[in-house]
Length: 101
Image (cartoon, rainbow, N blue to C red):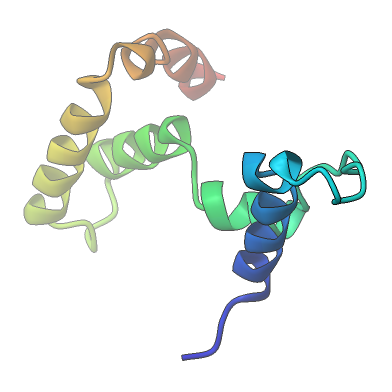
C-alpha cells in the first residue's frame, strides 16, 4: 500500500515535534515548523459540518424529481445527526439567513 504524501509529511512533523526528540540532549535544538497544508488536509479534509447541513437542507427542500423520498429521509437523518451537536445547532440561524438571500 502506497503511503499518501500528506501522511508522510504529518509523520515527519510529529516526529520532529515530539517530546522524545526534545529529551535527547545531543540532538540539535528543534526548528519551529508549521504543519504542511497537505497534512492538514489529510487530517481535516472534507466538507465542514455547516456545509453538510446546507447540503442536507438543499436535498430536503429540493423540488428536483430525481431527489426521491428516500433521499430526503436520508438527508433528514443526516441533518438530525449533525444538529445533535450543540455547536452545529448554533449554525441553523446563519444557514437560514444564507438560504433566504
